Length: 278
Image (cartoon, rainbow, N blue to C red; front, side, top):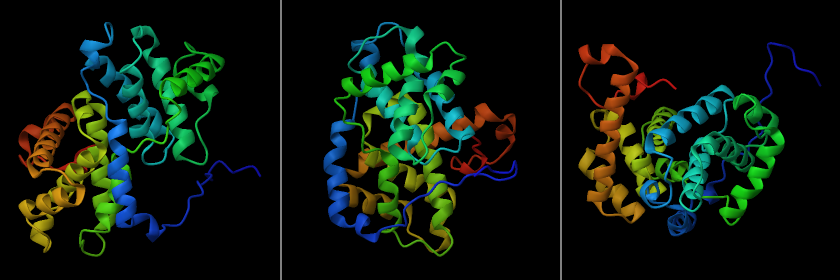
């Protein structure tokens, strides 16, 4: 059936399943995520041409595509996980970096949404520098180098578990989820966050989102109690979680300053996440 120009095909998604938010599932996620962590040191140890700035430029290009096509939550994070894991084991020319990003987006969309992006679309976004056929071939190479372990555990996978375990006031859930995903996206763009497992990035992003909406003044927990709770829940030392949280707040400051000169005249509150526009 053809759609009118004012209509849009909606993605069919499953209803929330409470059984997928059990303690056993969370424990399995925490146990599995270590397999998908890669060090940012691959720039020194493996890659000779590719730099952290090139990675960030690639990430921003990939994020533009994700936003243009309203991809499902987690597609961008999963695609960048593929990029980092591939670059950790395969030296490559900088000229092939965009093709790698396009291929990783293609695979991630197949893993995370019912209607994936297409090789032809990826060819278009590379300005035809990589053909659809070449991207399909690259897809096989990337999958093989990742040992076909493509359902990686990433930060967005932990957010539903945090949301159902912290007593948020009615009406705050969607806002907190949106803000936490924004922080996760910011972290995913920066190579220095590769050292953190997804659970830590999710926990720090969740805390930053709650601080950003002044949750403690709305009857919520103070930051110290929240970090203690998240550290216990995610089986991580509080200092480790707090360090990631502080880096996220600094990153948001930098991003706001880059995006708008008005930041210099505005509040110094570092978690004004509403002003981050992707």
